[in-house]
Length: 91
Image 1 (tube, rainbow, N blue to C red):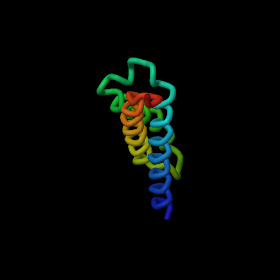
Image 2: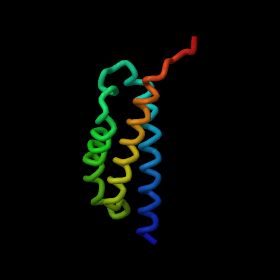
Image 3: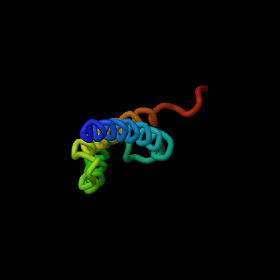
């Protein structure tokens, strides 16, 4: 039962990380040259995984949670970078 709850938390963390990262990159990092690099999503995902790993000592958070969260942030950052390249207003 506890591992099923941990998998649910991992899925929720992945979805939340993806949506927040995509929104943040699309809105706030639009005018930076950082989002133009092809490895931006990979670096963001690795950094998010490294930040989330210390939380795996909690009994309800499994190590897969950190990996899923990092993958969600990485894909969200990569798609947010694509969103940032689109024009703000249609002429």
